[in-house]
Image (cartoon, rainbow, N blue to C red; front, side):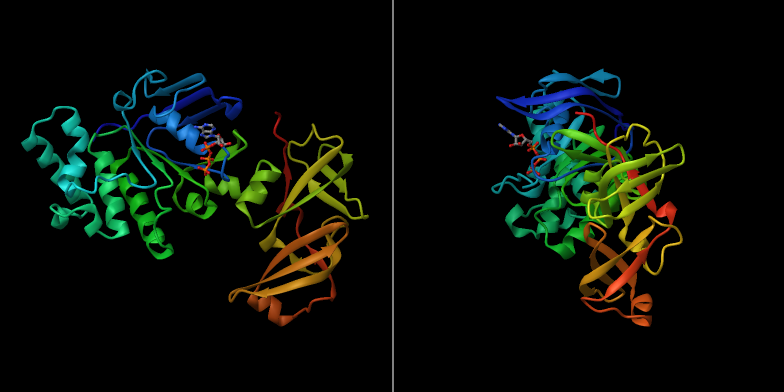
Length: 363
Ligand SMILES: Nc1ncnc2c1ncn2[C@@H]1O[C@H](COP(=O)(O)OP(=O)(O)OP(=O)(O)O)[C@@H](O)[C@H]1O
């Protein structure tokens, strides 16, 4: 295998006719990273991946792979390989010929390409199926053939477009673990497009959250989850309550918000100096407790609108203080020690360190 390469995306845009799908994004993906491009449908993640692969032209900006600027290179000369969502296997060829296909295009001799294809099939534990055609395989096996076919070119970076979306939920989780294992053992850079935050959290060293053609946050999964940069990231990652309000105090140490129906909320100020009119804060749903707040602004009194039993936890929805559908996830033990019912008024509280001040993206 070749060495992994860093991918450097510098101010890259993609414009289709009158649609700007990607707005001058910049991103460095260190060599050997498992990177997930994450976001809702239409946010520009596939366009970004296809520009890295060379399957889509770059409207402006540059992409570097290792030391080489690849902006104007055709896909086969970039050192990348792409695995498509549909796997794009040839139905009439057996696995050896499917996997060897790109070597055939390069003019590699039959013996040599077949030997290499068999090695790749061995790596994917598919050598026993070498003479089968794709239709004679399960979904998970087809996915491994597609991986073998992409990896046979010894790429420095493997690009994967929703690689798990065709699999049933059980297989998805199994193949997810295999992808991670493969990336760790090969050590090459993986860039994987997904709209599933769970998938990205499970796989990535670097999550790049995209929205509307822009990067909202690029960081380690734990940083994205624990310190979401924007309201979009907090909502998209889930398990956060986002409260938006008017700024009534913004000092070095504290941010105080007022929500229209009278609620007041407090956060330790961490880099929110620019917020003067309005601001958003996030409170983790699993950090909310039933009880009186230790300080005004670190909780509110609300009415329970829904109680959902989830086995090890119970999800409460609460409206109050100008905040709707506020979620508290309580452990089953905490809930059943002191159960509450729909319609009941309850105090909710949390600690100051469980509040994150969210930034705003400058467009
Ligand atoms: N060939 C094209 N011509 C015109 N517009 C396009 C083309 N390809 C994509 N777009 C538009 O560019 C935007 C970004 O699309 P892109 O496929 O990159 O998003 P995505 O995040 O990968 O979405 P999905 O998860 O649905 O694949 C969308 O608004 C889309 O409609």
